[in-house]
Length: 290
Image 1 (cartoon, rainbow, N blue to C red):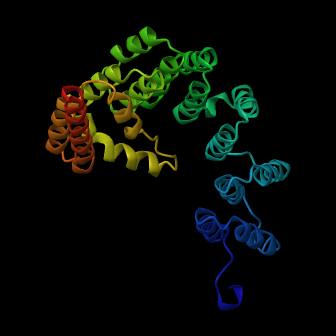
Image 2 (image 1 turned 60 degrees about the vertical axis):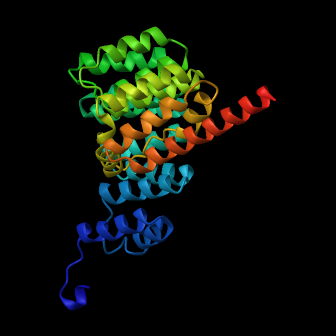
Image 3 (image 1 turned 30 degrees about the vertical axis):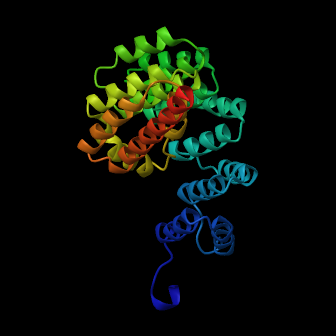
């Protein structure tokens, strides 16, 4: 490049590393970094993308090696790198190691901790049923003047529900002024885990009634833009649990409501399931009569 009058720039170099890592070509990205190290000194952004790349392909050991190399060379991990590392540790069932990293941030760089980091830690603590620890983090966040968003509250609700603390979960839900799909998702998922399809249906109806399903696309786009995995709601499990009760009419009404708000695919699922239940009931009735 220099021979053609183009100066080596770490910013341009980092763009190449970013594209490679985003396309799961982190080994190639690392090779480029090593090969060109004499020409272009990697900076904190370079290392952050390598950490992201190795975390993305599930290579926690290599991600840790890059992390240590970055620190040894005097670069302080930014919040994005820390959150990537935290997410990967939590996903790989290394909760204690992730909490140690979070604790080191609380001790050394408390001012750098914002809503996104707290949201991540609370989500995984609630997933693992560590409600005591999650409340400590939740209270710390509020004491620092950081207002919890609905994703945080949805995680708290799910954590409480999964531990069978339904009354507390409903109190949190009642206290949410503008509940969105994040909050309802946490409640429905928790109720299904407790095998309470009737209550899950009531919450689902309330969500549709308030038009919150319209926010689903925006919610998914927002989560993907932040590089996070979209939470999955298992509608098949929801339908399976409710099939043990009288739900034919409910499914027909639900299908109509979903079509009204433009969710035709989901409406078709409910309609087909309602038809199957009606057919099954007719077969049962004929068997009983005969």
